[in-house]
Image 1 (spheres, rainbow, N blue to C red):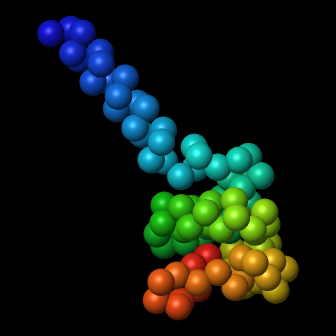
Image 2 (cartoon, rainbow, N blue to C red; image 1 turned 180 degrees about the vertical axis):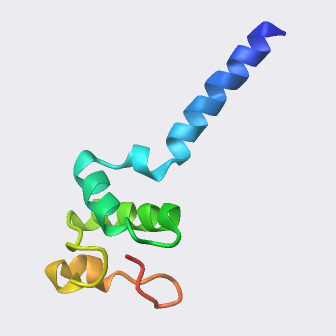
Length: 87
């Protein structure tokens, strides 16, 4: 019984690391996205999409909103509904 509990804890820890967007980001993206998403209402969602965009574009606009002209790749990414993907 104890071995099952330990295995469960190990799997839970591994899964939480894989699912946490902040853990999967490089230090550059993590710091930039933390600044970008600091005032977001849904911070977890903002961090997730900012991390995806940062990884692909290698940049994040400065500030918490706007300034997307600083990173055209980030600015031009669209989701499946043709809305801006990056926060």
